[in-house]
Length: 290
Image (cartoon, rainbow, N blue to C red; front, side):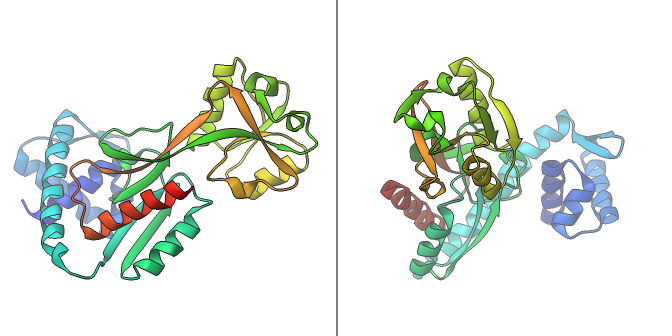
């Protein structure tokens, strides 16, 4: 078996879909199928169960994927460490951004000014199942989330507040119990992002289900609805401070405890080269100032 064959297998295992893996690897579907068949023949066992047009790792495949993924990480780490003796910080970082998108432009611009030879590939909201994500060096995400198989560094613990039009009854108080918001209409993100999960969870803790009249992933749509007094929203305060203005007021919540944690995470066993260590330290310093 060849190294490239194993890399192809790992991508097929991540995607559990030949056509999707084909697009990501820029390899034809027939070629990938032949590679997989050859590998299974050499191992003497099937690695996937076929379910119509889809495939799914079976028990044998899960065992093999776990070991081969770790072995390829060791090979890649060895190469990275050998290349890491260059005196000038350089390299490439793949970053998945699932939280803090409002403050990311400033952070990344400042980073590039300091380290122009370290390039960044930024992907936003590509998946919320990081175990199925393509290769990445870091992910910035927020609770709640699945952090299995990751090393997690806390960047920030921030307050969740109610965003309301300044004339809204809720906005007439400096702070409220979340239960006081139960009679009002909510706007929120679509299912998936952590803020949506947090909204549902916090409202249930407070003793009610929010009356959601709008689900959207567009901050501008969000803002328009709130400014038109069509609804209120639960939003993180520190990282979305720019959302608030003369018309939209942040109202702090006394109960339940409404906070979220933002993490910088990277895969366990992933070698951190010099560029990655520089980026990690920069992120920690940047968020500390927030």
